[in-house]
Image (cartoon, rainbow, N blue to C red; front, side):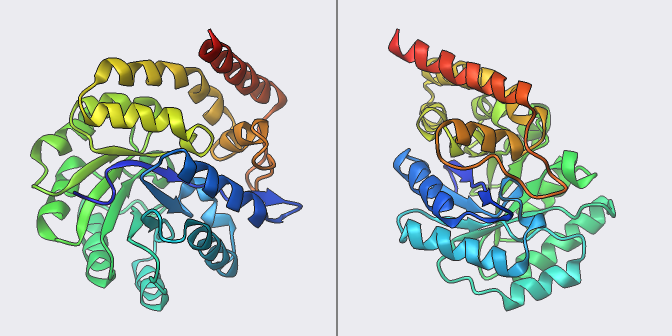
Length: 297
């Protein structure tokens, strides 16, 4: 079975006074491991990698690996680039010790054609010493990796093992699931629609909300994997009221606000991102209070 089935968590990178807050990162990493997640994703979108220096990125990786101590697989989400040549150089220079895979978002800003996306990923898969998880997040990259392109890549290269499908389009995800070759996994990259994709045969979720609520999120995913959708739906509905405020002011501002309510990190993000608004924080406070009240009932 793939190391990347089940629940992965896209770890935040906590900040304090403009710097990476490594003690808080240690607390959050321990929190999600104890919460039962299956693997860790460091420096994905939620980890604010695009606002960090290369030195900071490497320090974050070291921190996550040190607190994990080999207990869970670790995916490096540091490999998105709109410059294929520069990305291949990054792969060539990177020390992959302690990692189990890479998460590579499709090229942003320059909006390549489907053929350009295909050739880009083929070069990445050739260069990477570890399995590659494709990352389709059109809301951020400006272009959608179409199902036929994902399936073409899955068939063409043994080193491409999964896709994090974050389009939020269950029809698109279902098309990939239906036609995917044996051993290629479709993972949700969108918490609100994860249950829907799992019900169509998805193999897991790379989650934002699991930074704060790993137990509840993990329950939804594990129950889905064994076909217990009545229980999975309960967990989905338990989390539902968090999703809108989590993204109202952008990611990771929302999840850092929720983590702050749990005493795990500051709300601080790095410009051009800004912390969530007061009214959004109040919505998260109400959602958390209601969830706790329901659990006691």
